[in-house]
Length: 205
Image (spheres, rainbow, N blue to C red):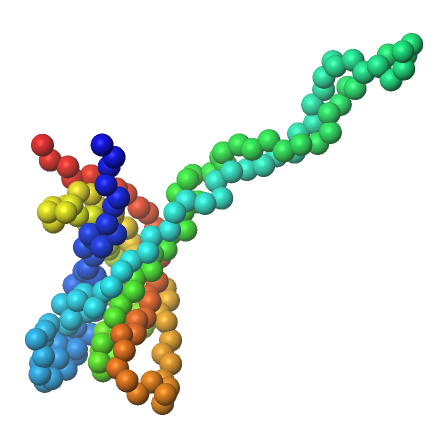
């Protein structure tokens, strides 16, 4: 029996509440509570708009080195004259790089968000970026951690991807256009870099 193909929508990822500066949360909590809506909590409002996440693979782990070698293969250039080729031409040998494999992982994830009306989720992250840059002594901690949970068909957690010390590094710009008069589902992407990655498998008997 063949194994089933995976479903890439069986995941759970949330921005931790303590990752967003408290004053930013307070500001957007006040805004949301003044606006009629189902969600009135800023961090829930932000996490509800997450559409997907992209994790890079491992690339460029092979090192190629030129090598010249000797051999004893006889070469008969004429019926009466014998000779030897003592040197082979340059060729490349492929070996694994000696550096830590983690250095070959592009330590960056991309989180895609749905663009919400009023762009509140966009500006919440925008302000978070400024707060963490301008006041790192308040928000920069070695305990920052993102967790991506991978789920089974039944919703049980199969494994976790742990990303340590994530830093918000890039956020998409906005494009306003008078021709976009009809509502459509737009998205924006935010990139985070991290310092280390680990995998935690949660299978239970």
